[in-house]
Amino acid sequence: STSNVPGGDAAAPADMATLIRTGYIATCTNTEGMLFEDENIQIAVKCEYHGPMGRLMVLYGNKNALPLTNFRVNFPTIPSIDSTATPVANNISPRSQAQQLISVECSGPYQDAPKMDVMFTTATGQVSLNLRLPIPMCKFNEAVPMAAEEFFSRWNMVKGPPLEYQGVFKASRPIDMVYLEKSLAAMRLGPIKGVDPAPANL
Image (cartoon, rainbow, N blue to C red; front, side, top):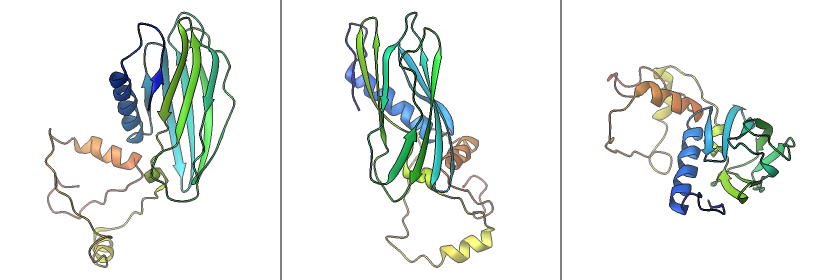
């Protein structure tokens, strides 16, 4: 993802890439949060999903003392996602927000999340932000509640790769189990209690 921001206060490309990646990951693992923020704009999202359908409310906040003008948002199409978006204001007043509702429907598997291009003009020039919507394919999962016994019955029917995969890694810091469960739920995965006798295992 790239950003073209004229003027001496623009973030360096590496810093901008970090901003974009951090916001994307944070909003993928939550149902709401800040997708992007810099000295000009805040872009926050709230989302909900039901089966193959999803809705995202996107809030564009102007942080400047002057309006953001020529404001435009473009959503490039991808084959497996059908989307519609409400119009967004052409100008955003100082210290105020504009909102946009995006409805999406998943019709098949995909690898890369849909993109959104945000363009506007500030007092110092034109700005173009190339972001990713926080819609990884797992957002269209449906968690299946079940007892531990039913889980093991189904798990034992899985016989090796490519249906079964195990990876072991060492965490760089202590794992917050409450945060982990919340993140899994945001990714539409349902932890099952009582499968592992060790309470620290999820």
